Image (cartoon, rainbow, N blue to C red; front, side):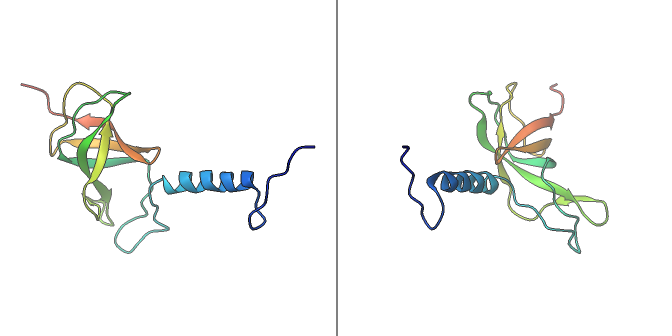
Length: 126
C-alpha cells in the first residue's frame, strides 16, 4: 500500500506544489490594468513601444545583456504616445551586432516575466 502524504490544512503536498507553481507563474507576469482610466486606456502587456534611456549592449541567446534600460510609452486619450508613469525599466537583449544607443526607439515584449528587445530602430552607421 502506497504511503499517503500528510495534509496541511486540508491540502495535500502535491496540491501545495501546484499552488506554489501557479503563484510563481502569476507573480512573474507584468501587472495589468483592470480597465480604462480617465487619462489613458487599459495597459495590456504584449509588444510595447519604448525609448532607450541607458545604452543596451548586445548579447547572445545563452547570455542576454541586462545592463540597458528603456522608458515604456503608451497611447493616451488624445492618441498621442507619452511616457508611461514610472522609472525606466531593465531590458534584456539577446541580439549581437552592437549596442542600441540612448534615444533609439525599440519594441520590447514580456518573456517569462522579463522585458526583451524584439526590434530596434537604430540609425544606419555612417
